[in-house]
Image 1 (cartoon, rainbow, N blue to C red):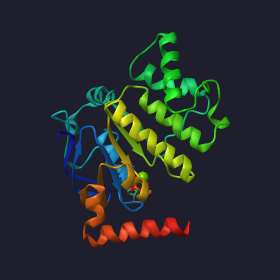
Image 2: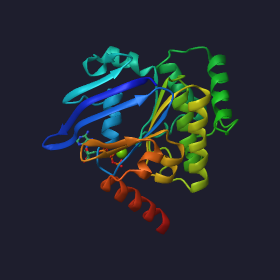
Image 3: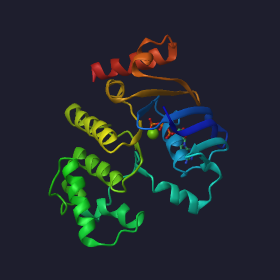
Image 4: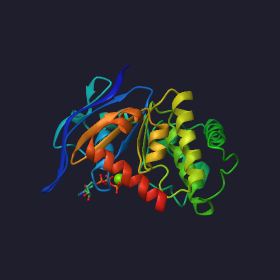
Length: 251
Ligand SMILES: Nc1ncnc2c1ncn2[C@@H]1O[C@H](COP(=O)(O)OP(=O)(O)OP(=O)(O)O)[C@@H](O)[C@H]1O
Ligand SMILES: [Mg+2]
């Protein structure tokens, strides 16, 4: 069991609003870790700190033994080569077709220039997400679920060691959500990745997660296997799980 990312006593406020108030979390290599928690608790803020888009007020984030909170912009960009990420609000570029969208991080992050190589990689990734041959379609011509899958392909384009996904299945119908879940498990296992995923979907989180981390009141109030989460007598976590399942049942 090796930890690839270690977060220690992480604090982040916006003005007088304390969002992260001493987060501690270890991300295990090769595993799927799912962060759950109410809307507005700081899940996206936590992810953005990990990738250096936001700087914490205090605390440490160690990646490969180095504290990334001390990195300058060059070192952050360098570190990001290892990361494939799909943010909640990050859409595809409307003015680029699917192929160009997927090739974008390969050109920008990996500085790949060989057109043939790029096209082959794009075709491989489209196969992987089960949407072969849609290179020339525009994002506006795709369904929401297809766009999510293309976003996933774009995140995988850089051959990441770690993938970070913010709500990859939100807004999708259960069948599509399930296919995204399966894809995440598949790429994590087959490409030997580490996955850190934020999810609102409790059944899915418990189904695919090797580990569940519950962000509550600025801290990770619980972390453990899905089984440990179900069996824990943590009252707030139990209430959160029950509410989420209740909402789903009535949806
Ligand atoms: N750049 C920012 N500037 C100021 N406040 C911010 C910024 N980013 C986030 N916040 C605030 O931090 C809090 C946590 O936001 P965050 O987006 O992390 O929530 P979340 O847990 O991801 O919620 P959701 O489940 O709805 O996506 C919110 O109150 C938000 O308004
Ligand atoms: Mg969020």
